[in-house]
Length: 341
Length: 130
Image 1 (tube, rainbow over the protein chains, first blue to last red):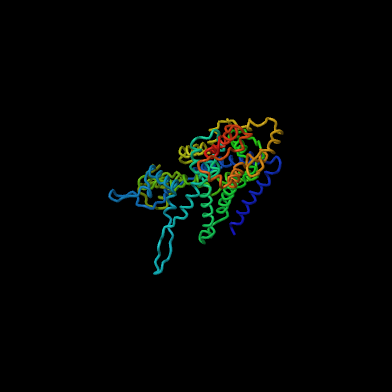
Image 2 (cartoon, chains in turn red, blue; image 1 turned 90 degrees about the vertical axis):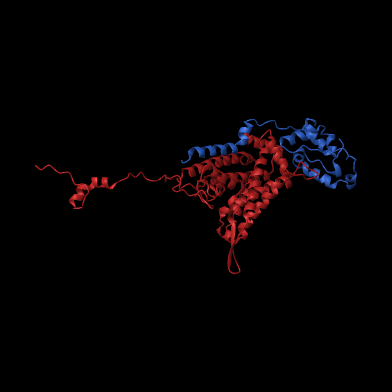
């Protein structure tokens, strides 16, 4: 039932935008004010989050390693799994960010008759994760055609590469990533519904981003292929380029589905820095991932260590000698002889 | 803050990437395509003409605002309903499109908006007669 609240929340958000944008005068709020506010929250929140992380001290050297570390010269070491310098750390981070390497290594333990405990690799999460993330990236880049004028060649080329020709109107191409992102999101959602251990640990804030992204994808796909009526792409581009040049203008009546799509995207942007989605920045800031496994080469000093001066026995005795002599405790150096009057 | 230099560098790169449209456009929103200049300048007259526009299969030409958003759907319908025999005429060109009875110039009628929205330029003339 933990999915019910996020689902209702996304439906309510969509309804607010759908109904709200049909009220005269509210188009400007949903088309200009909300997106600007969301962008400020996104950039400001993201920077705040990263600076907050950067301010947190790391008391210990805590890289997670799962390969042979640097050792004696004849022992073959694993540079990616136990990196010892910045280059190797960068290599490991690159593999993680670009290929989701740690998900590729995912294994599932099961009990076979015998009984024998066996581990099999399961890469479904990797597959659907990578489908979703790369589709999302391509879709974001493709959307730039609506925000910049003139459109750079690379963006048009990406658009053309992504589009399947649909006859008899090849201009309205069928985007491959539209289907793939839907597949990825539905699979990631079903994973939380169907796998009992995952369902058990899934919280409302795990479901909410999935429903929100599904809402964005569904409104976007409907707007392109089905509910075209009122989706005046020229007026939309005029508005979005206007947003990017700080002279927004709404020149035509745009259908509520556009404002719903834009509002859900604004919600995603505003929600992003304050949720688990900020793993986009967090992957660079994880001590277990971005530290080198060099604790035996370089001394790591805990930044919050108090400044304790060394206190040797000799200086200790210097400090307390008088009391020690008085109490009859043996001392290494006697009190100085006092001149007898 | 620890690793100040690195963190700030990454944040600056991130903000620059996110705000790409802002500094790429640098305040210039560009020219927005205008209404087809080959139509009568008098809007009332144009709206009157729309009523008599002939489309295949007795389809009606909707008002301009509507046509702008759904013309691709209408073209699909027209093609789906087109006479199968016409499609079979190999080597022969399809008849001239009736659009160009009023919208005389393709550059000002199709291409200007398609270029602005970065949509492929229509090429109907691989099948249709010019």
